[in-house]
Length: 203
Image (cartoon, rainbow, N blue to C red; front, side):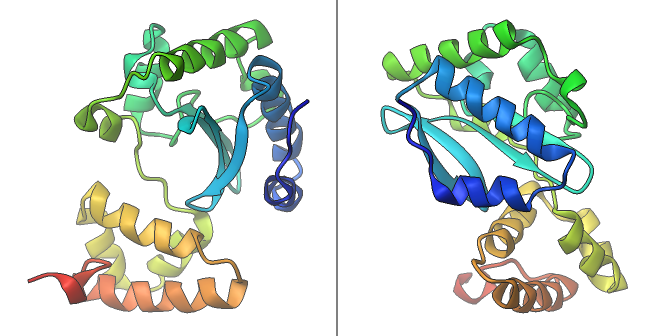
């Protein structure tokens, strides 16, 4: 029987109404295909691990959801990789706005089972390939705040994926709204000055 993480329940409950059936359906298929999957919150959104290794993840945003596989770079279905390389969502299925945007259940289950097999075999994804499949997506609430500062927005648009990722992870990882707000304001100040998230430790 699938073990559900209350933090994932909470994440889905706080998602937009359009996203809830999508996330619940994906969650159900993940546990159907992989009963041993473990639910965890990483970088502010749900991830599923199998045999102590990343399997897949999903996330919801203001107008769409995303679903992806950690090892999509070495999976057989080229559609997964092509979708990720478009960079319009942080997953492999593109921007999911309704149930109709999802592939058939049997296809999703086949993808999950293939990802499980990769974990069973201990296959790792080369760092360069893993980076390509994880485009950075800035949450709408964070981007809205950045846009209020012209210098910060100009710097953000020119910054690298790694620069953005460090800030996005720091902000979404906040457990409380108050903490997240403070982090956003601090982040925007540093971004406007062209400073990376860990600039204090850089030589």
